[in-house]
Length: 291
Picture 1 (cartoon, rainbow, N blue to C red):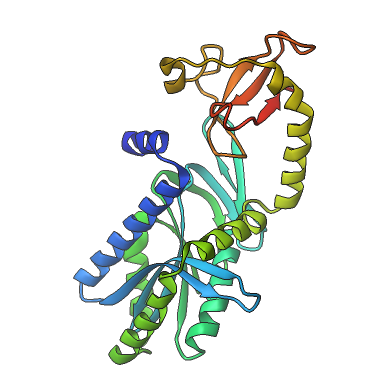
Picture 2: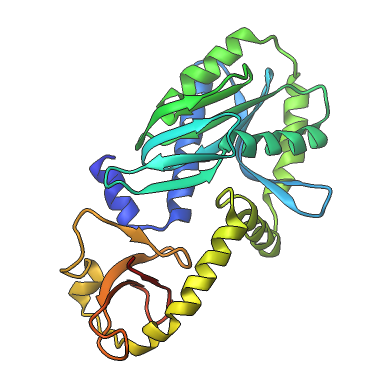
């Protein structure tokens, strides 16, 4: 990870980093257009599904070859995954491992609803784009119509697909598709909120329901500990972890996304015991016992 990326990750939340990633992907596609392969770009397209839910596509590129459907991922570390596996893993230098839903399967769902919306005669291409902050250490893909790349390979990948496929969409059809799909980017806040809730339940991890149940159980058991701790943080403590915390370990609160910091219970039956507490306390009271 570059120094700039590290600083941005430290300052901004995951949503901002995600939007930045989509913007960088858009920039790469603009480079494609500069070299004569023109197309029209849309971001955050909310495709309708049959169950009144939506399927959000990060970036699409509408061209005479068809529609390139991009799923953008902004993980750091080493990436391990298989096209047929339900979950992939991001392994960080400090040993922390984060699992996430297989992005090929995720984009396959996007293509399904895109197909329903635009019809059978428009070719679709699936491209999974990871940021330059990661290393695709072991990623196995067997399908010809699926590409998993780092963002700096976007131009070369699109160019390769472009050169291998005949023109299938007229200029008039491109404009028609663009206007039709553009309407799906102008959704209200309620639609976006419902989509986010659905994603959190289905795609946050391959076993999201089980994970949430475990988190709830742990939080209930530790609630008494949280109530017994009086936390007073100075501005300096807000900017950096407690002195007792390991400088290489960084834990994230599964409830609100803030950093977890190492604390010590000051009274009660757990006095003297250390635990991980959310740095957003008292707004967020998540705690995690040290095993």
